[in-house]
Length: 151
Image (cartoon, rainbow, N blue to C red; front, side, top):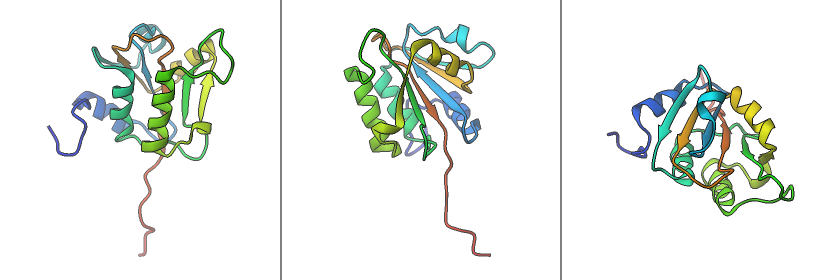
């Protein structure tokens, strides 16, 4: 265990998040998502029994989001108006705003099959135990900045 880190962040998950570069994406998906098929050849980390909101909170506690831009995508719910958000999607979007600085306008709903195509390009997939359908998010990694070099 390490101080200050969410205990849900296993060594394997921390390694994957640290390896990601600026612009790489990690998908955090529900239990029914076709992770092994879409992430063929990539890392799939399983968090069985863990809900989506909890997993996203852990990931976002260490992952800087790629701002400005659209650093967050989520699977749009089929047969609903374009602006529809499930309660769970709304909770994760609120986490993105509170913990990652990504306002809701920077969180984009993506049609299901287009979302699948984006996941194919992701660096890794974190599959949760979430049973609610359409509980799938993509987070694009940003950069950390520090004080300007004064040498």
